Length: 112
Image 1: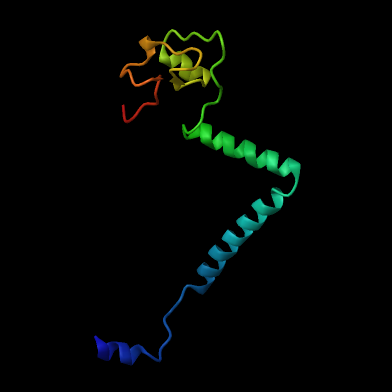
Image 2 (image 1 turned 30 degrees about the vertical axis):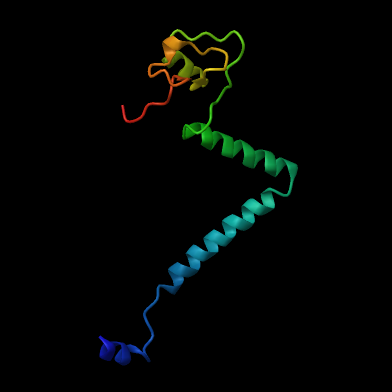
């Protein structure tokens, strides 16, 4: 092993320099682009809107906060309105919707 290392010591390793350059340029371009967009109020608004949309799409945030007077017959209705999950202290929460009685009604599906 040491002998092989000594033999290859003076040789250059083949590199995918073009690929590395393009990936690096893409990362730098994305960082600079997002950074420059965030310097204006309109850019910040667009970035926040995109982040909010992504959070809703991934289930990390709700599309609509529960409002006073909300009543959901089933969790599917609350999910369709974008108000799920509903926490115990929020409008629209009912024990009937909280199947596991953990204070969170209409939780997201987990592998079901």
